[in-house]
Image 1 (cartoon, rainbow, N blue to C red):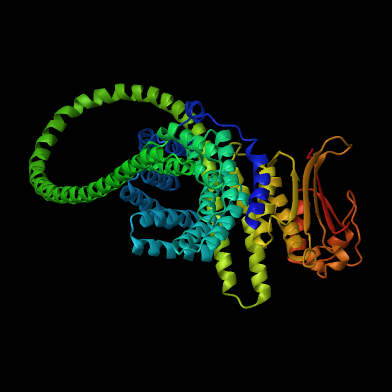
Image 2 (cartoon, helix red, strand yellow):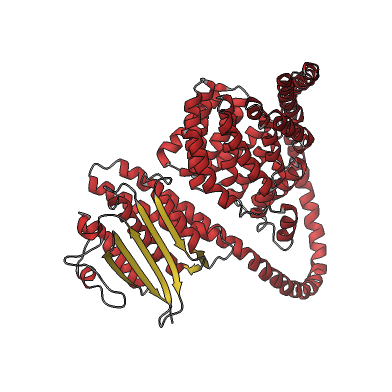
Length: 634
């Protein structure tokens, strides 16, 4: 019952979002966006398109595009993109069944991420390497990278890595035969993906969760899960995931006694097997197994025998392909070793020849010197003409460089914001590590508060490099991620916390976005820390709307919680009120807050409010109510 209720509530929250996402024609979109871009500017679209090609088994096109992009990234000395293209190459080979080649690419990418202190990417890549070594039955390497991923997660607490860690834990419980524990960790992984809005990964995990439900005999819940994934795949045009749902649906329907429906989906799966060409035999084996059980349930034993023979035929083909692949991998390693020995011998021969050539070059130098003297007069005449041609070429080259620099400026600005974000992430990690070494609780609290402020600024730079408009910040996405990140960070459950974020879809200049982000970080942090200690149903409302229909135009920000308010908070420094203060009106002075020196958080809010020319008020209205008015600059 609990599992069914969880899936039902989760489907209500996701379906409204997923239904609004129309399918994307990546082929035409990619060609259209790439037409007028420089090689460096194409990297982001190359990343998206390669993922699309991999999902549709178009491996040759993906490999060609990756080789071209990898050379461009290396020539431009963009280490982050070089590592990303190595990582994508590993995904292509893993999907294609070339596990040894895939792990080679992953290790190249991991080395770059370690050299650039990209901790989140290190954790994600370690998880994929663990999966490859599991498939290769290399338990020692699997344990080595599992320990590395666990250490990174414990030290840096990356939220994006939690689903992978939970999924790995669920796999361990499945192997141990503890299905209930595996289901529990599967729900945890999907909850994090739901909070972070990673819908593609969410539905991939949801499909695996349905398989676990089927194995556990929870057939009704499994059917609902697979149908939810099928709806999403049809809306997104994801043919491969649609095939997987057709393969998985017959099993729970068979146990529910709905044989006609089970047979219908099995036949749909057979008609779409070619959508996943690398695993056709494996899929046919699974479908014919399902058709065998359906025929047996109908009493059609002759037909069941036909299906069983087909299933065994494809099972033998799968085993044969796996053996051939293993033999090919051993042969590849042997040939590589032979080639390397040949290369070493050629290097020795080349060095010997270079020594001989060096002595011959000494004799040629003397001859060249005589020829140079004879040609000197001739060159003087040619130089005069060359200067004239050079002048014309310089003008043309300058015009060309100006055009190229204009194209590169956008990419360089994105790279700048990306690196600033990475540097701030390093600062945040260092502050987190420092706080663990402090004994004074007040010092620990001060360092942690500073860490959250750094993360608030880092989030703004992240919005910059993810946005095509490099001058402004999309404030809606920023405020939403900041609020939900703090909510999860302070240990609240998003399913039970009534958090309403109403933010206009507008762009703000960085001079306003950074102070505003820090102010919201302070106000929200105080709410999460002090407002809900004795509240059974916590609520939080965050509104940010432009005001254009009054005598004064500007931006209005309101934050309302349902805590005890100013008088009942017990922490006047944390709740920002001053002695005797009950309300500070907009448009007037801020006497109580301004006259009192207060805590660092208070001073920071006052300074930032004055910096952007804003006015704020703080009062009690069924909880603490914070209001900030930022007038439109003249």
